[in-house]
Image 1 (tube, rainbow, N blue to C red):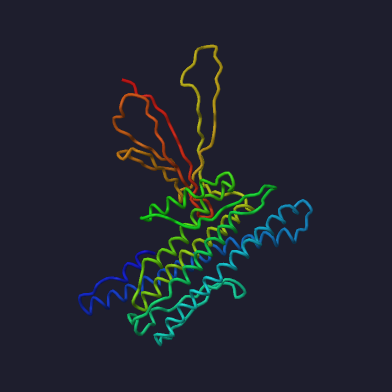
Image 2 (cartoon, rainbow, N blue to C red; image 1 turned 90 degrees about the horizontal axis):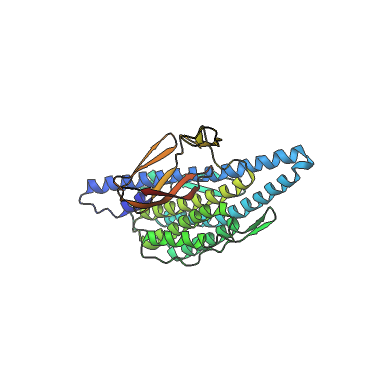
Length: 358
């Protein structure tokens, strides 16, 4: 998404170069709109799936399904509340785009996707702009305020609830402090990891992702001062992309609570651990487990404080190679992560101690 923004400030040395840059900006804005449409349907796919499950349970009318039916109903209630808050911001962004076009005396086609009675995302035929580089600007503070409010609302609607007889509670992050994007990302991450005694552990990564996306949307408005019509429209479209991404993550978290199988795997292999040799008369204990993986969704491995380590991947396995470790006790640490069916990255820490002898 950043690419569509960076192109707004290309200095043009000739009319032909300017024309190329404008065409590229229009193409990029159109591409972001296509991504927005995909994000909308990703989130709505979770919604339609849960609605279908509720309809099935309702139609069956079995007493033993009553608990599951109530759980699905609770999830649908959160889906509706999330989309109600989303609708307020998306409608406001669409209004800003239409106002910019009206002020510039531009009339282009629009295409609506979504539920007529709920969330609507409006796409625009940017290629029809007659004067895409005409001067235009957007009113930033009000939209920023709405995005910050949306961040608070989605955090509460996703992280604070009662489930299975247990209460979960999540404090939203009010102020994000940091000089760099990495500082801000770390601040958001630790804010939620510090609440691990109150937040459902299955929600932590998703809540971090929601807050990162909405903080990024707000930061784009802070740091960019577009001066052209296509520039302003592109910024709003990019902001909308982050918002729809956050929505899909929030809805995905609720879907995984009432659907079986958080992860998808298409292959498995046996793992056997046991002694390499024993004395005659001794017994044998073997430990067996399954290693499962998905060819289209490989795990990602990191290792701390070893910049020269080489990591390779094959058939769901990661191999870390270290050259010439020093004699002594070597403790290796890092992370392994994988995306679940909702697209949320789940991260776990790993540690291995090895004695390096002379």
